[in-house]
Length: 368
Ligand code: MRU
Image (tube, rainbow, N blue to C red; front, side, top):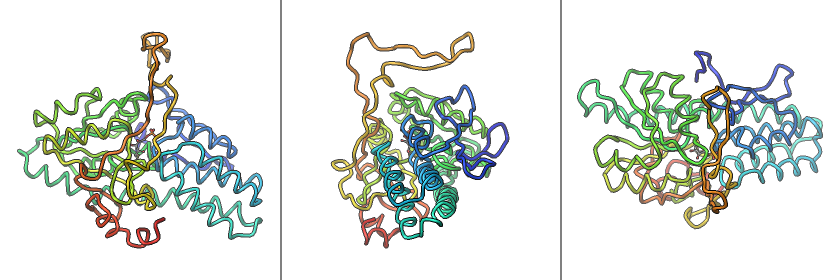
C-alpha cells in the first residue's frame, strides 16, 4: 500500500542484504521512521515493544529474527535459543508460533553452512506468501461488500466497522480486514469505515486511520463505545475484524473489545466477519475461549496517553487518578456462535470445526 503515494511494505531487507528494516509503529502517526534490526535481540525487542505488531507482521519479523540469528551463528544451539527468545515475546499471536516453527523445522534439517542463506530465503518467502494470502482474502471478501452496495441506493457508501489495526501495517501488505475494503474502494464501490480508536494503545486512531487516509478511503474514528449505538441506528452494514489466533472450532481471539462488538452486532442483525490468514488458525485448540492465552501488558498503557501537543512535540501524559490500580488485558475471545463467517485465503467459511476443516483439510487432520 502507499505512504505519500509511494508503495511501501512494512518489512524489508536493507541494501547490505542482511539488516532487516521495519517501520517504527510506535512513532506513527506523527512520524514515519524506519528502524534497523541487526540481530535476533533487535527483532525480539521490536516485537515486545510493539515497534512491529499485528499477528502476521509479528510472524514475518520473527522469521527474519531467526535469519539474523543464523547470520551470527548457524549452530543448532543458537537456532534453538533464537526460536525460544522469539516465541517468548508475545503470547497470543499464533502467527509468531507458526513462523518460528516453520523456520526451525526447515533449518534444522540443513547443514549449518547452508542455514544463513536458506533462512533469509525462507523468511522472504513467508513475507511474499503473506502478501499473496492477504490479496486472496481481499478477493474473497470483496463480494460481501459488493452485495451490500447493490442493495443500497446508488452512490451510498457501505459502512464497515473495524476494530484495532488489521490493515497493511499489521501484515506485510494489504492487511486482512482492510484487504476487501481497499479492493472495493479501488474498484469504485463507495465505502466508509468506522474506525474504533482501540484503547489503550489506539491502533485504530493511530494506525488504521493513518493508512486509510493515505489510501484515500473515507473513514471516521469513533470512541470504542460508539459501535453499538451506530448499529442500533442502521449506520453499520458490516463488521470486519482481524484475528490474532482462531481456534479450530472458530473461536476468534482479537484485540480487546472485539467481543463486545460481536455482541452488539448479533443484537442488531449486523453481519460480523473475521478476516484471517490460515497461519492465524491454531489447529491444536478446540475451545478458544478457555484455551487461548491472553496477553496482559503494562498498566502504563492504560494510565498514560501519548499524543501531539499544540507546540508540535509528542508528549505522554497521565490520565488515571494517581495510585488507582489498572488492568490491561490485550485480547479477548469472541465465541464462534457470534461470528457470521471467516474470510480466508481459501474462501469464506462458517466459524466451526467443519467449516475450517473444509477449507484446510490437511492442517485440520494433522492438528498443526
Ligand atoms: O496488539 P496488536 O496491535 O499486535 O494487536 C493486533 C490485532 O489485534 C489485530 O487486529 C490482529 O493482529 C489482526 S492483524 C491482521
